[in-house]
Structure formats: structure tokens, C-alpha cells
Image (cartoon, rainbow, N blue to C red; front, side, top):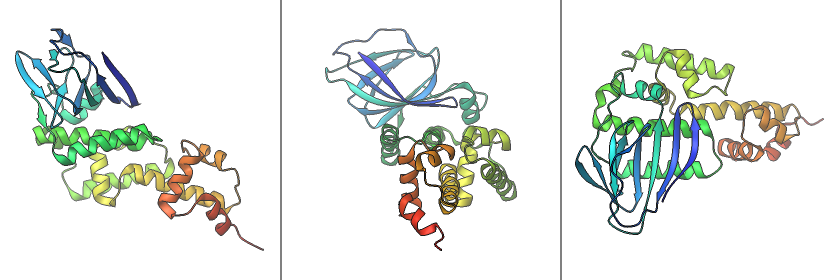
Length: 271
């Protein structure tokens, strides 16, 4: 009836592809969620009842889920539906929404940009996965939806001055330079900022995401190793934190428009 495929589980965030194949009819009353999160409808439609209020959910809408909220799902047709869900642990919800963890009950409209973004996130998760990049992208998507409902709590933790924001970015860059494998959550904890604030401020200051910065540092470390004569690309990829040799190759192509083999030939000094 209901199948949920977990595509990413990292630092309190889970991204899942949810497929429901319930036949036409009324669902069971009193279903209770066990996590916080948001669900984006990709295909089909169904009726969700929460606190006696029924809402038809179609691909123009998303809805929030919270632990202990009783809900019922009714299915007006036999064709099933597909959704993308992003679930968040208690600590992540607190960084996004403050001490009040009561997420909005009603549906929330998804703009064309948001709808495309959650589909692109899902597509990225189905391919060769850079977990850190996927985590950052998913978290910013959730923050964007929360801000659409109420920008106050989501924006409350941002540094108040340009100097404070610049210092935050410099601190994060220093930590990444020392260890490019640090996760967004770890970085945020080190600089005393919430993950989504750090991600946004970093992008505003540098023009690229923390995930991109991390990849660039690792690619440039790989270039240095190639220039020194390293020939084992699989070992190089493993030591620098790439998923595999293919991930290293794709990252190098994206950054330099050349393959590791071509770069190695160009960089190694000739007598």
C-alpha cells in the first residue's frame, strides 16, 4: 500500500521517495505521525483530514507532518500517488523554527520554482550522491517553505551585522580549509550558527554553496596530488573523501572541464 524509500539519512535529516498505492476508498482514522517534516505531492491527489479539517492535496501543494498529530488519508481514485518527503530531527527543527515545534497544520502552496527544486533534489538523490550537497539543498528547501509561512522564526538566528556575517563565513572557510570533509551540521556547531543560516550567509558572501566550496577544496587537493605524480585515482578519490573514482572524475570535469588523466599528463613535470 505505502512504500517509503529512504534516499538520504544524514545529521537528523531524511529524504524519502514515498509511493502510495492504496485503492479507492476511505483511509484509517487515527494515523499518527512519528516525525517532523514536509511532504511534497508529485503525482495524483488524495484527501487528508487533520483535526476534522479535510484538504484535497494535489501536486500544487505540500503539507507539514508533526509527531502525535492524528490524521486520515482518503483516496478518491485507484491510481495512487507519489510524494517527496523531507523529515527532520528535533535539533534541526529547533534551529529552523525555534522553541515552538508546532508546525502549520494546513496545506502550503508550492510555487513553480519550489516544485521544480524538490523534483531536482529527488533526481539528484537517485543518482550518484554527494550526501553533503544533498543535505544542504534539502535543508534550504525546508527553510524556504517555513519562511513562506512565517519568516520570523526562520530568520531570527541570523547575525545582525555585515561584520558578524563576514566573520562567520571566514570562520567556516578556515574550518573547511583544515578539513574539507566537515559536514554542514558540524561547521554550524563550531561557529555557533544554525545550519541553514550558515549555508545562506556563506552563499551570499562567496557566490557558491558550502558544498561547492568543499568540492573545490578537494579537487584542488587532487590536482596537487596529480602534479606530484599520484597515479592511483581510486586511492586518491578515497583519501580525499570522494564517493568513488567516478565521483572524482565528475567533480574534476565540472571544475576544470578536463579528466584526471588529461590533467595528470598536463601537470606532471617533464624532463
